[in-house]
Image (cartoon, rainbow, N blue to C red; front, side, top):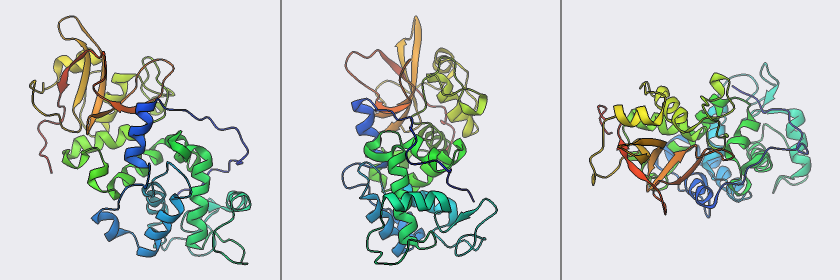
Length: 319
C-alpha cells in the first residue's frame, strides 16, 4: 500500500495547460463532459456503493473521470476490501488510513477546505468511504486534475512515484468502456502494455535525448518515449526515430493502423525526425518538441509530413 504525499494544498503546484487538441483528446480518455461509462470489468470488480461514490465525487471536479479515483481505490486497498492494517482502523507503517490511504494531516487539511457533502454533523473520517473518496477527488482536483490541466502531476501528488502513476492510469483504462479508450481494446497485449506505460508519462516535459525519470531525466524525447514504452512490454527498440522506422515491421500503405503502432514523420528517403505511439481513434501519445509536454494529439494534422507506420508488436496475437 501507498500513502498520500504530505503536500500543503496552498503550495504552488507545477501545472500545464495542454494544447487544445491534446487537452480535448486527453479528456476523452480520462474525463470530459459526463465522464466515461464503466465496463463489465468495473461493474464486476467495484462494489456498487463504491462505484456510485466514485462517480458522484468525480462530478465535483470538471475534467476528472471517475475511473481515476476508482483506480486509486483499487491500487490502494482493493476498494476497502484489503485486510491489511490501516484500512478499517489504525494505520499502516507509513501512517496511512482508510480505503483511500490518507495521512491524517492531509485528510484534515483537505476536508477543512472542502466539506464532505451529506455528512451531517459528524466529523469527517478517512475510514468512511464517502468521506475518503470525496476527499481524494478534492485533492486530485487541486493538484492538477481540474479541467485536465495535468493529470500526471495530480496522481504524482497523491503518491510521488512514476510507477504509481502508470499503474493508476492503466487500472483506470481497464475500468472504462472500450468506446472511450481510443480503440485500445483492439490492441494485442504488448501494445496495450506500451500504451499503458506511455499514458503514465502524460504531462512530463519534452527533453532532448531524454530517457525518462527512471534513467535520471525529467522527461523524454519522442523516440525515448516510444523505446521506453515498448521496453515496458518486453520489446526492445533502437534509440532514434530514424532507426525505429528503418528496422520496424512496416504497416503497408492503406492498411488501417492498430493501437500500439508507431507513426513517423519526415521523408523516408532523407530522414525521419519524429515518432509517436498510436492509441486508436486517430490519436497518438507523443513527446512533441522543446517547451512542450508529453500529450495526446491527432496523429494526422494540417501540414504534417507523415511518413508511415511500423508495428513493433506484430508477432503477438490480438486478443
